[in-house]
Picture (tube, rainbow, N blue to C red):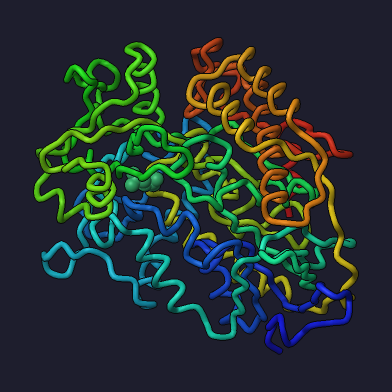
Length: 541
Ligand code: SIN
């Protein structure tokens, strides 16, 4: 039976419909589409729910590439990739999960290529071209269209999506339905029509949380929906204080929302950061210079901006060979503001980029809630720790997404309880005014935090929070951002040290007592609660 919505309309209400599926995937980026494909190929009826157009998620905007060891770069190995990932992640990376994910890279990339994804060729006996990014000890990042890797991955996955998969664009996930286990998902479309999709499995693949901040490299859909859905369903989050700021988003005066990315691969090809007086930003900061891990570079730029009062620093890419041809996406963004990257230094500043933490899962996407899976940026497998290594995320989405689709098919292979579609619920949740929340988070919970700033941020958000019925996309998003901000602020306030992308001005050093310690956040009786992940992970499915 196809899970086509119109074919399943019921009389549940004038503007309410029902549908049935085996798996509902929330989100249509690399992880969601990889899972949907794997599950559909194993005979499951899959519905993909996505808020915008299917290709409007973060995957499409990824530039640099996919970090993967394919065995054709002298001296490189999965062990070396694991070592770089551990070093970047500041002591919080789960080595076993990392080995599993990075080790699954070659077959995931090979499968993607058989589905039609085309990566840039090295013109060297059939090898793929490679570039290097911060924190990598060698050139191991494959790319497509120069700096349009995410767009090519998204295109290929959508083109190869099995025809049996139903995609509901313009639909927002409101709540995970639960009895003793997951029973489906309530959604609302852009015209306010409410739907109930009955299913024994729901996968959250909703991407990131960039909408918590005034400027972000993420698209508008990245409003922490998955964190909120998971918390309300009883799942735990971890490492949510570690929001990675990309060092080099294009600095466009007055811009709010999505700031164009200026890929780190430019620095891999020789571009370097200077302040407005021409002084190298990374001199004396880190021996790896412009290719230090992202947290280090973003921190150095933030220090320069704070010290000089300048609105941005400059990325000088004028020495990069044929920069306009090799980096067409960056070039187009620069051209739009009258900057020619072949001749002019590019104005850049850090912007919120990636959530290193998220819903606690294993490498098959399993959360601690029966019937609920999570994969991609929304999830926390332990690969990223306190600071994600560049270009590890598309790989994680491919590997864990596929593993999740396979795992759901296995989990549903036995007898299943009958699910009766009920009436949709209309949750009510606290939702802050979004502009105020973003302003407060950008001031108090970005790169460089302290106890007073975090407390002031909480107060500012609380003062503009009111209860709202989650009956449309804006309300769902505002409530998700409010809950996510609360989780992040609680975790950031508790971690009284600096580590990875969590930088505390009032606790500027690493504290060994926090080594290997992650805080789990859960929602208990409507209140955010922090505990040790040891306890929560012990209970994971
Ligand atoms: C970039 O191209 O700089 C971004 C890649 C990533 O975030 O992994």
